[in-house]
Image 1 (cartoon, rainbow, N blue to C red):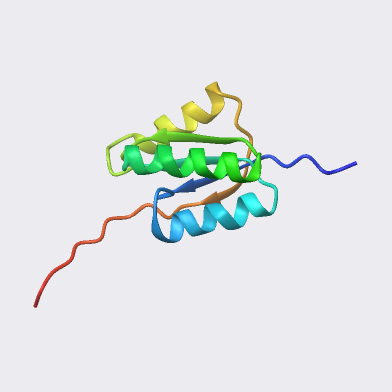
Image 2: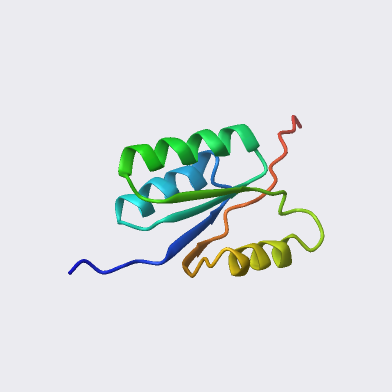
Length: 99
């Protein structure tokens, strides 16, 4: 019998390293909860992964820079019965500057 895996939660999952990690985790059989503040890119990435791998991918559009966002994310997981096995906290802000 194949082992049932709980969900992997990846923040900053709509592009870059977060999206690459999402690909790696789903290839290893983990259902995903992808979180990002880039709504359209997030929805498209989640849909593409779910179609390609046939594994559940949920997504949540959320700006984790806002006050109480971590608590809101925790409550969302609890309310929607997500059991998180892996957390990849990849959300961040990067500013391009010319010096």
